[in-house]
Amino acid sequence: MKSFEARIAVITGGGTGMGRELARLLSAEGAHVAMCDVSQEAMAQTKALCAAKAPPGTRITTFLADVSDETQVQAFRDHVARAHDTDHIHLLFNNAGIGGGGSFLLDDRSEWDKTFAVCWGGVYYGTRAFLPMLIAAPEAHLVNTSSVNGFWASIGPQIPHTAYSAAKFAVKGFTEALINDFRLNAPHVKVSVVMPGHIGTSIVINSARAFGRDPKEMTEEQIDQARERMARLGIDLKGVPSDLIRAGIQQQADAFRDQAPMTAAQAARVILDGVRSERWRILVGEDAQVIDRLVRETPEEAYEASFMEKLREQANWRFGLAELAQRMQR
Image (cartoon, rainbow, N blue to C red; front, side, top):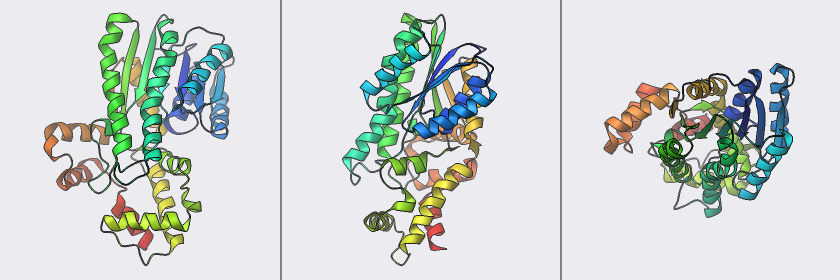
């Protein structure tokens, strides 16, 4: 699929980040785009951006859906069929994601389950729902977004990261398993797993808001919980005012988006280039390349402090808890 003109592309999580940029690039090439997201406002912004650059006649539709709920994903599929007057699609980007449930031991189970349900369940439900429409097309491509956390279950030795990592490992394994399944049973449908590193998106702040922890609106109880988490990691914030902690967390989320080594737009271009080349494994970002190599070279070291030092040196990996504490204490 060298050209996306007149193709029908379905994108989950199209309101922000890589989903928005995929929608913009695809519609600019004349692809018809159907997106879903949990924010109608964000999707409206994406749709306006797409419409500004899309050729006349390009159809861009939105649908409010939580991909962790299979009935909502199925409703999204039915909407796509009606709104685009079609029984087939050419491209499916299972892109929606959320972060949370870092500790299996300490974090609330509902947060853990929700993170896993969005990041893994959204891919599974999306593939189940739209696979018949992919198969009905003369040629099609399924693109599932995993992460570097699909081969490295960490964001640093001081930070538990279990729900997101478990989900992204599942996405990677599922997608790889589909390669032979499609070759045998639907050879005209290609499949790719996307493994982004640190991409400049709003996932940190969006995830916090989804779990009722918008930094600007954190309660004193939530601030105390943040202090406790930091204290367990050897970072004492007892004397730091609550407003400064709120500001520090907000700054950290903004920095994750604004100071990333790769923008969401750049990441979307890498993904679409990978689709054109029919690569089943699409690493996005130099840090993804470095992490992949380091994990393969020294797997037994992957969860030690020494691995993190290598990562900082070779891949400019930043924005850990130490940096957050520094921001709060200034």
